[in-house]
Length: 138
Image 1 (cartoon, rainbow, N blue to C red):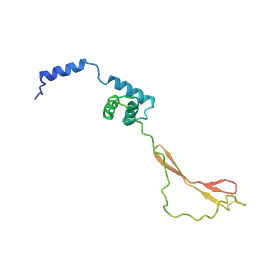
Image 2: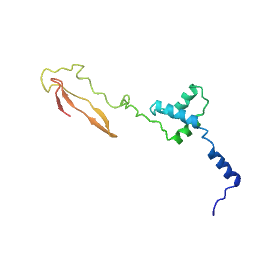
Image 3: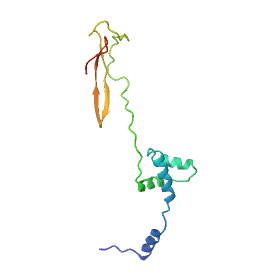
Image 4: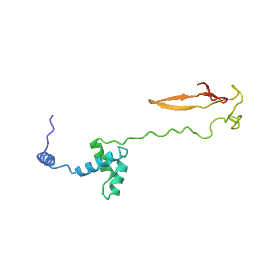
């Protein structure tokens, strides 16, 4: 079965093809704002910029035009926050902020550092001798 197109619909589509794009000025403006801000603005903030400049435009129209142009906002990675509040046991404060040692192997300290490399989490935990600042192991 072949779907038939009415005569009036056919001529309506043909007439629309001959006319210039009604959104061409919006496409230029949105493209300019997007590239001026290095792709960091999404459709909501681009709408805010356009409205601040006195243009009356809806965010849905901006979203539709951005999709047509293939413009997507670059989502920045959230900063890693390791603090989770009071979880677990707090170790007793044996050193009491006296970070000097009189002889080797008297005071050792450690800490854990997390690195995010290539989408993978890596942890480093060096053990430091407070006598001379030498790393004993990691």
